[in-house]
Image 1 (spheres, rainbow, N blue to C red):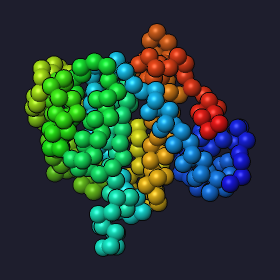
Image 2: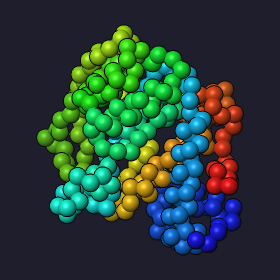
Image 3: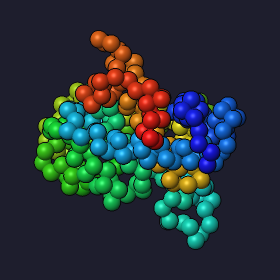
Length: 278
């Protein structure tokens, strides 16, 4: 791989965190495809390592969790029989937690949508928190055992299941389903009913789809390797947590989620992110 200058790295990173595809990034920056991909993978690993060490003892009080679907190589229905069920081919899920107050993403996991990865995700999340939290998840049944196993009795857990329906006049193929109601269940502890919500984490799903080309729906954008997907997700969340001031955190001054959570004292520049490679 040709070694990129800092300015060129910054230019490539700037494209990637704004949702530009790798081919388009190559056209804009003039860098080779293999060079851009290698930079993404190496930087993704560095971002993941930095967040793993830094996002600990967090003062979060209200956490929302969700899972977002993507695929690698091809959708599961199009995979050859010998690869069906092999992780890294077909459906891949990204588990995401967000602090509703600071908008920080303290934990995420790329894996399957099953009980094993639910427990891994919840165990990682629980180990990063310094206080008892109110936790809201969707109605996915694997959360029941995963939350209890990771938090024990030290959590206020509620499930919020949205009920969807499609109005007769709607265009069924491309229009999103309409939420017609919610079913809220208190699972454990004493969660505040007024704060039971998954709105912030669902909005984070949109941020992911807008900020990572491979998460865009109804296009030919996808990851060819699960390692590339993991690197893109790590870079996205690092930029989101540490470099991108959040509109809701502008008072008393523009802040990133990491600043609001007390784990950073300034908004990182793209050059600083590139410096993680050194």
